[in-house]
Image (tube, rainbow, N blue to C red; front, side, top):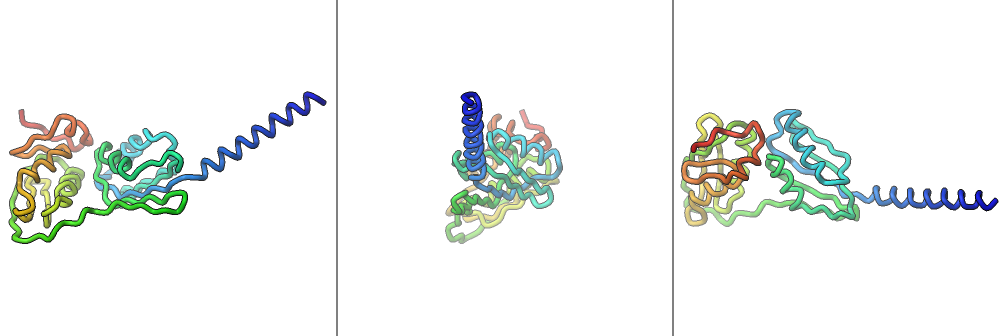
Length: 209
């Protein structure tokens, strides 16, 4: 009888722990990110692999055609929007709109910084080294979001970035610095080795000595 009581006690303890774990697992935040540059299953695999560095991630779903990427993560770990955006960049892709639906119902989004009023627009062409559509998305994302930039288009064939901007708000040097910051050399500004190495394999252009 004594042993039976002990066994029942152990079983009850295990069931209680299991219920606590289940409740904890159900308390998860939901993440949605629109990602530029997912051109193939290999790209999707690279993004998923990078995010699996976040221990506890589940429900990963990636739509290559739309770039929609979603997953869930334990609410207790309080994964931030900044960390998610940074992880997408580390994987070699460009994050666009992102949304977090917290377990408590709160919703967070990343909003683009609004440009000041743009006047006296001038248009320039800047040589930017790159290889593919993923490069195009990355370069245009890095430059179009700059304060003072009205439009930004990079051509894969010519390697020219055609950019319209207000010279009173920004200059070419700052634009080139933003491009170099995401791993792409220009004629005037060289990307750091670290930012170049962080590019996806298909984006690694031949660098000048």
